Amino acid sequence: MKIANLPDDNYKWIDDAKSYWNGVIDSGLYENKDELKEKASQYIDELRTKFDDYKGTSIPSIFYRSLNEFFGYCTMKIRMVVDDDPGVTEIIPDDDIRNLFTAWKLDAIEFSAMFTIEGETTGDLQTTPEYDDFKSSLESAASSDASALSSFEMGLGSAMGAKSTYLTYGRPKVTMIEPENPDWTKEYVYNDMHLKDVLDFFGWKVKGVNI
Image (tube, rainbow, N blue to C red; front, side, top):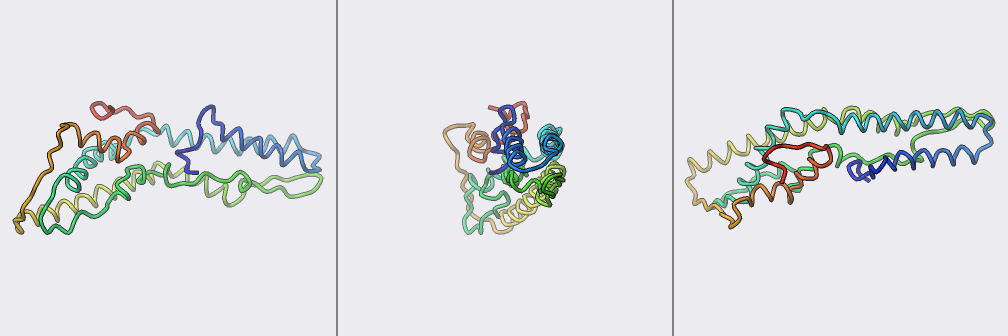
């Protein structure tokens, strides 16, 4: 399950992770069960903190710039029909804006992969490489998203430049699809390209964009 799809009603996934490890610890012969449970709980809460930090990151300026680019991408790729045009590179995977964000690319860690417990009577709970990698991915998620948006922006700029050159010197026949709904482009980007899901996940409100 991608982290964007984790249930966030009172952070049920956090509670479930703690319940899982409480069960693992209770099933052992450890004399320090309370200590192990507390340690596991602290590590799990660290993931929650990193997740909260990621979701609460201020909107980067590059995201504001990308909003206009999303609509330009939609117009150039879908509404502009150009004779003998080789097409526009799929700069956004599957034309789904969510694919630019870590939230829809990173799988949530399996509970069983979080920790190991060494010892039979006095246990020593340690994080696994999977836990450490997952935590690191959450810590770098905001910068990874900014990098993906920057790459999109540069890729679109290159594609638009190539298309502009072709339109100028190739002089092809160009047909613009004019939908009956004047807000078609906005609604297509917002719904079909899933901009709404991104805004909802982060709790972002952008005047003139939210429908």
